[in-house]
Image (spheres, rainbow, N blue to C red):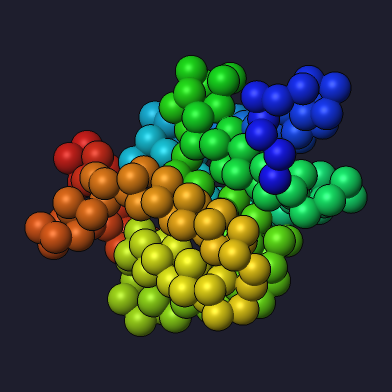
Length: 211
């Protein structure tokens, strides 16, 4: 990958891929879909997160599934579109799509936690890595019923899967993605340790206090 502070005549496509990935990743599908469906601002429901798990707390399973697919799809789309111009472009666009989801300019940089988008990126850039990460998420979620724990375990495993099945640059990307998603889950980690984390289908602590 070239030095991005080099000659602009050479590096501008990489800046363009980064910007396009960020803008695509920053589309807040969970917020848009719940508003269109008449559920109001998803940020005022449950955990306040804009991702599929919190959308599920509205009771609209279809909206939650659509949010999951669209959040994952935008990560995959960023990689696949940029990949037309080469693997370096795909890596940059994928990384910036995740940053866009987590820190969207439209929501004053307060976005989601990036799990679905991360999995979409992995599926597009190295599908065996993405498939193993998704299977890990499903297994942990099915056994223990904690979405956050499933995310943490699957993302922690992604660098190992990439080391086993993919190229060094993808290992580096997976470490970056896993680190960012883990940092976004720091509150969840605290609740898991204290035994206060909400299970899939359960009410968040905000909901419990309101009832």
